[in-house]
Length: 587
Image 1 (spheres, rainbow, N blue to C red):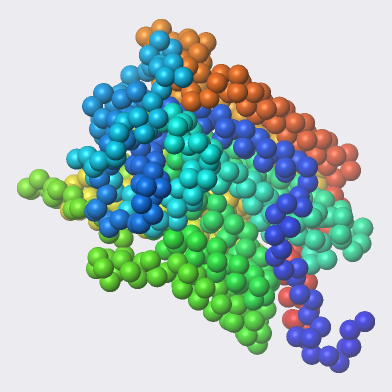
Image 2 (spheres, rainbow, N blue to C red):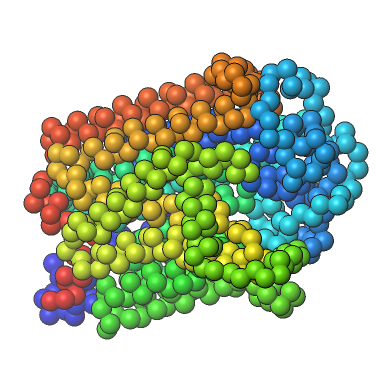
């Protein structure tokens, strides 16, 4: 029993700090949703034709170049190699070998080269530079180093057909983004945990009393909506299953989202700060959009400081210094190097041609199409922006997301007065990346008269944070006996959205567009795969089994919530993990 005469700082109950086990000690339903996510990624990896993903030839070319010579070239020193350029023709991507002149026709079964006769990259001869610049070296090298090491370590990769090499790298990207649902659940569980006494990641089994246990069970059901929300973004499963450096940044920022939720709700330990710094450094070595991270990390520690009160300034400040120092030293050096060598933070291979004489940039003329591009490409604009979902479905998805985000801000109730700041912290990555992208696009438009840089995939690093806020929004209105419905409703909407997107891609890329046939499109897709059809069918079957299993698990959760519910009073009194400690320090 605490000494009543002891100072508040000594008696304050610390929230549970972050542990990596919090990412895996989750309900079976969360694991099944994660399995379904992996199944969807696998399905999308075979839906997209080889090289038909944003800049995929350039990304593959850079991985192969690092295996040949483990040295990062200057920003304008890498021309696309002849191996990748020559492979574009048998891949059905280009008739000229140019990565910028795509074959926009659908392919049929008869067009495919038999699987055993497809050339390896080595069959195209020595790799020589072409006339087309590879702009990838403007990015940091971490993603490409990971790909090069993985491919180099694969036995016999030198003899694989070129499309199997691309397929292998796609599988590697699936592995990279596979943890996202578990990250979303862990962050949502921490944010919605009713009290310090309830274990943030492991569920209600470790709670101190029956009321907290009932509340913890209810909040676990709320948290299940977060990983399911990720399934409703077809662009995420498309990009996540192809060769793209966005994927490593998406996962690293997703992990940082969980870490900073712990930080903001009271975990100001130096150990967690060190992990935050290491993950931040890795993100800074992946892509330029990670430059928002120092502001985001600092914001989380300021929020932790605000919760503790001004007198308890030392732990948050020390932890913030550790996190920012490690991230700055570990990853900031790359950007400082750019400033020294290229006189700019983000160099480009060469200047764009200036706009025609008489061009006058108008903000309205830029904003309307730029925003339309961004929204469409966030939800589902596939390939090299070859085909998109119908605008009606995109508008519905965007409005639904906006409403669910708003519900969290309007209806969420917690004893902790900083709960809205938690939600702001979660959407901050999306907002800050949007600001960076819009600034770059507007600057290019004013000079060159072209709208560039408004790619929806650039915002995907913030998707875990948005998914958590969506879960909070649903949990704010679906309480008590309705607490299990949120995840189930999201799963139904996501299934419909994914089906529509898959059908669009199948009909666009495969078969005869003049006489569309689902069977003919599927047969053509199988004929063009690097993998044997039997293996593809097994993978699709496992994805289907994961869909059924996750649906059943979420249905059981909803039925249990309806039959037993959570204690309404406990849910109304539930707070974030910092609430108890805040109340104790305020006495």
